[in-house]
Image (tube, one colour):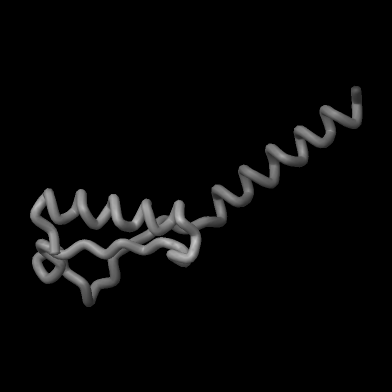
Length: 69
């Protein structure tokens, strides 16, 4: 039982350190909101996988329905 608690503690500490060390995503200063208005970029892994292709197709259809290019 002691080993189980030690492993859980290690996992919790690693997750906490990862969360602290991961910076938040920011928009570069060269890209302004008005420059990107009406444009959306969909990034998915390889479309060789049917799941990711369906995901990209669905996202593209939803973006077009919302008026994005």
